[in-house]
Length: 328
Ligand code: ATP
Ligand code: FE2
Image 1 (spheres, rainbow, N blue to C red):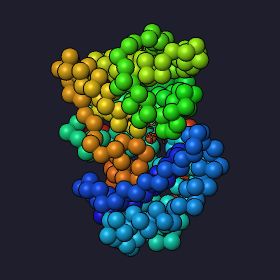
Image 2: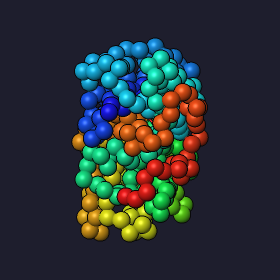
Image 3: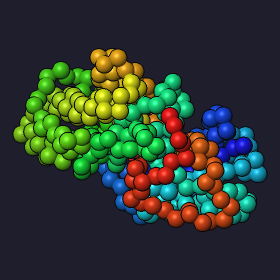
Image 4: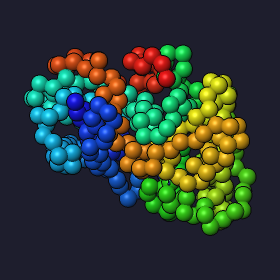
């Protein structure tokens, strides 16, 4: 059975096709970008509306199948930007109704965790999910997906993007900051803010912008920014590993593409006898339809004919999801 998954929580409209064994037959990603990287929800939604049809055609062609071969449709119900989520939900519902295919809405954050489990040797990991809008440390524990730590304000990708824009590096900021950071090893002290198990980046952003305005070098600041925020994220991840008694750390989300984050995560894991996992393919780390399709397969028992339970849930939290999974 094939599942077609639709992703549209934020910048990216994506459609993936995955079979029941987890083979990814297609994963077409259409990101909405602007020069400044800012996102206007209505404009991003317009982008998704414009491209939903071509994305579908490209995904089916890439998979070498027709919509009649698809036995299940899944889509991101949330969390995300309402205007954007509606386009994915509408696409999924229309296909389901038109072709009489069962449909299931799934949680975007959990999809990042489950695609990582599918594509790496991690079996019961703690996930460090780091993207533009989201920063969460998640794991499946005592029958639920639980959040062990998260950002209290902006996501780490957002922090990198805003700082990159401030210093004129353009969008997306993460890869440009990574490049600049390689040119320095001069650490400038920045606020390191962890409250309980949560992190906060707002004060750090103001502080680093001021330091840049005062003339400190962009290379030094990029290097220091990476060292500081990745250390914060890994401190919380390490505490989650210790708390859960787990020995696998999985990275997910666009920021997980960062080599320095991967290296720091590997060093932390080695230090405590744990293993670090990150899927090789950048396309499964960023927002994508294949991860939604795979979670659809895992959640297929919930799929229904018709459109009941296909409303969007923009504020759906990872720990509110009733899991279909009862063990690791
Ligand atoms: P969401 O938050 O809803 O999951 P998103 O579209 O913001 O969605 P992703 O597509 O997962 O998130 O990732 C985009 C983010 O990843 C951007 O903030 C970008 O700067 C960051 N990013 C991409 N590559 C790198 C890198 N090499 N280093 C650091 N950050 C990176
Ligand atoms: Fe995401």
